[in-house]
Length: 471
Image (cartoon, rainbow, N blue to C red; front, side, top):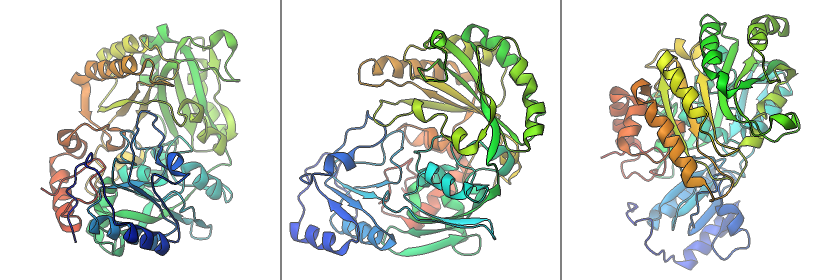
C-alpha cells in the first residue's frame, strides 16, 4: 500500500470513479465539499479550527472504517479520525485528506449481571452515562457530556470518580480496532496484550478503536456534588485550607479547583455574575450521609459567595460544566502536572487567576491520587500516576475577538508554573511537538511506544494525534 506523503496543503485530485465506488460500499455516508452536509460535518468543537477535508467518511460500523482506511492509503490521503470531535488542537479534522468520522457509531450494550458495557466509538460521555445509570452503574470518564468516549479513553481518562475507581483505561477490558492495513483485531490482557498496553494511554497512534468493553461500578443515582465559590481575592486562604483538607481525604472524594469569572447562569445570583471567583467543585462517590460529613469543612470554610454542593443526580452533576464549553467557541489550552501545592505555587495561582478577562476563560486544577496512583505504573502506557495535581489552563473566547489575548494569558500562566512542572496529561496537550509528547510518557514508555508504532503503523498513517513517530 502507498505511504501517505502528501503535505496538508497540496491540492487533492481524486479518481471520482473510485470515490463513487467507496460511497456505494459504505453503509454510512461519504461526504465531499459539494455536499449540503459538508459544512456541518467538517466543523469540530473548537471553533478556532477551520479545516477542509477532501472527504468525510461517516462510518456506520467497523467494516466502513476498514474500507475508509484502505481507500485513504491507496489514494495517499492524510487521515484524521473523529469520535466526539473534542481534540483540543483539532486533530479530528484535516485539510485535503479524509476524515474517518465515527460519530454515527452509537451502540451501547450494558450487561448489569456482569457489570460490563460494550460501547461503540462514536458514543459521547453523556450518552454512555444515560445508559449505564439506568442500571445504577457508571464508567469513570470525563466531566463534559459532549466529549467523545474514544479520545478520552485512549489518552487515559480522568473524571469525577477516578479516585475511587481509577482512570477510564483502568476499567477497559478489551477493544476491537482497525489497524493501519485495514485489518480488524481484538486486544485485551490475553490477546494482543502489547497492543492493549499501548492503547491504554497511547492515544490513536496504533489504529482506530471501533468498540470498547468497560467494567462498570455501582454509583448513584444521586451523589453529593457541586462547587463552592469564594471571591478570587481570598484564593491564597482558600487554597491553603484546601491543601490541608484533602491531605488525608477518602478515595470517594474527588475535587477540582476552578478559577474564572462567575458565569451568567440561572443558578448564579445576578450580583455575582462576572466577578472573579475561586471554587472547589467536589463529587463524593459514596453514601450521602458520609459525604455530608466529609464535605462539611469545605462548605463552612470562610464566607462562600455561592454554594451549589448538594445531593443531586449523577447525570445532572456530569453536565455541570457543559455550559462553559460550548461547541464553536474558540479554545486554547496549556497544561502541566505538579507534585504538590506549595506556598509559591499557590501565590502564582492567586496572581494569574485575578488576571482573567474573558467570561469563559478558566483554570481547572484536578486532584489526582487515590485509586489512580495505586495501579502499577508499568501496567498501561499512561504516565503520571504519581502526580499530585493536573492543571488545565483555558484561554478561551466566544469569537475570534480577544482570542489572542486569552491565549497569551494561558501561556503566561503556564510559564509562571514552570518551576513546578512534573509532567503533562497527554489529552490536555495542544500541537506542541515531539518533546512535549515524550514528556507526557517519560523516556522508557516513549521508547516502548515507538517500538510498537513501528510494528503496528510503520508508515505513520495515524499521525494526526499526539504523534509517536515510528522514525
